[in-house]
Image 1 (cartoon, rainbow, N blue to C red):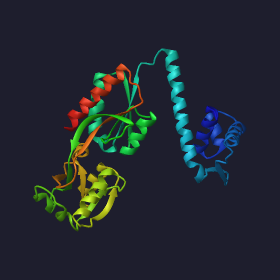
Image 2 (cartoon, helix red, strand yellow):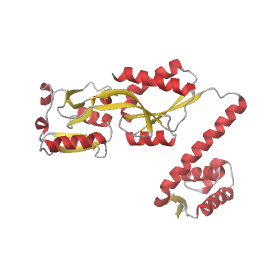
Image 3 (cartoon, one colour):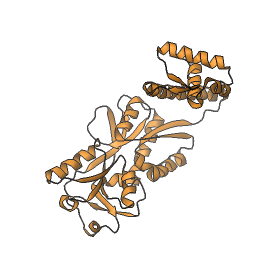
Length: 297
């Protein structure tokens, strides 16, 4: 598999025909067809269905092709960096940060502003996703630094940043807004918007209801605090989120109240235990920790 084959593959996926792909790449149609044939022969796999003159990705090949395009993007970036070095124009150092999607609307713009103000020659690459995705990115090297919930994991080095309590969020006019704290009994029978069942906090929430012998009335399962807050703001129900993540956005149309008997969580920045940081990375990561600590506390 080589970069020419991958470029032909990308063009075919984008245009649907070898003729259009050839026009896009400035090659002959036979040349593009030959590159595709070579690639399928190397993989011993037919990647496309021929349907009414168009090439349609086979469902079983989709993940493979997505990974192939990711490899092409990485190769193209290497070639771009090599060209910059030859031209003497490579000046920026890339910092790859993996953060929760919830932080992108409020916390991350402030953090990136701090980074660029102090390090103007840095290029910031942001990766967003769930905690498990963030940890995968840090472990694989796709991100150098990640923000996640702190727990005992020997694969990572942790820098504590913030700790938070569980909060019940609701529209401002909701009847529960009159209470100072929220108990399980107060939530009985109310429509709930909860985080997905695979999240660590959801397991604690489910245990909280079981201990109080209450079956929660879950109407929506959201996979980010930002989505849960948006649904609550639109009067679809109430939710339970962590105070640290709630600081990730501007949610002026909702109110929050502490919940009794749910655990406190610790959050921090992680690096892979096997990674060797240079002096610049060590300094910058320490600064990022300080800035996030200030933004979240």
